Amino acid sequence: MEQIKKVQIGDPSCDDRFIWPLEKRCKYTVKSGYHWIRSMEAPIRHRRSSLLVSINKQVWKSIWKLEVHPKIIIFMWQILHRALATRLDLFKRHVAVSPICNEEEESVEHLFSLCPWVQHIWFGGQLNYKVIHKINYGHAAFMEANKMSNRVAVGSRTSPGNQANLIRDSQSISVWSPPEISWYKVNVDASWMSITKKGYVATVINNSNGKFIATKKQSILAEGVQEAEAKAILEGCKLANHLELGKVIIESDSKEVVSSLCNSIYQGRWEAVPVLWKAMQLKGSFQQCRWSWVPRSANMVAHRLASAKYSEMSNYTWIERPPSSIVHILNKDGLPCPH
Image (cartoon, rainbow, N blue to C red; front, side, top):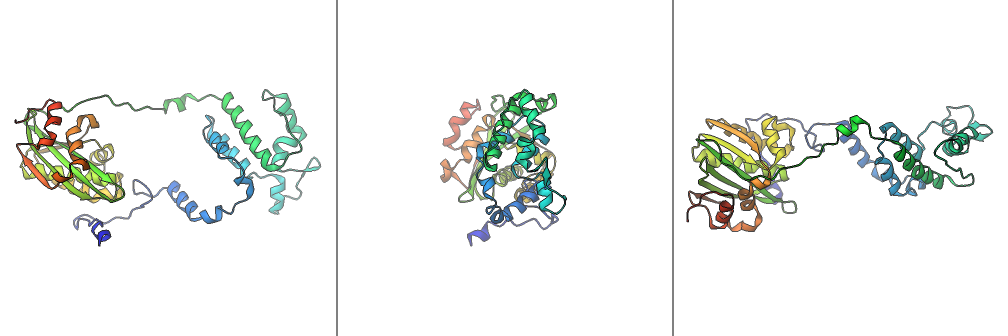
């Protein structure tokens, strides 16, 4: 019965659509399909050769973190997986006529370590690498990955194009600010617990003078954080519509949900789409309505009210006089509150 209650019922006026539940934006991608197939093949992969199992995880991490061209990293991956078209492997697949190179089988270790032509490169180059002849393949692969990756990393530089992509987000500290004259700010937030799938949403409304208008806390069921944040916005719209407010700014500290409302509601989590669709429908009931993202520091009243700490306040609405538990937060934001 509890599971049935959690099922989200779509709006009949909203068209059904196909979704890919394994991708955040609901659309199928080759990457997500690849990972899904790999997960289905997990039992087979667990029976892989002892060669790959014996390779330390730190080796793989050091390879993937190299600041080199991606094709070099993929090439190292192919070496350790024995996925190169050496004469020995081609001979085993009945492609090459002979597996021999200079009187020896052309295996991976021969191709990169033991071949006389290759040894001139190791000894004559700046790498100053010493080849150990009598060593088994597992240890050779380990040493190749460890030493080669370190030297390539030291000798390479990050290209200007890659440096341009290293963007660091920084949020400046800010506080709540009143809206324009004749506008109302509707601050919303949500809290959600993954274990119980339950949470709370809160709405706090103030006018252009910073005067408290109304607040409401509501208990909810949701499948994820984005759905909970979407329900917070929907409840904010409902309360503002119930109070017959004309111009409203709906503020939330959820970038994903606000971005979906400003661009396309289908770009976020699929569970939140029916909720956001209802919010978009309510938008038409106002004279003007804007969606706005703010950092949590500018949304503290709604954030504090939505927490599970004040669970006894859920399913209540306060008009003109706020509950005593959030008066000190309103005062901290510089908002006038009745005493």
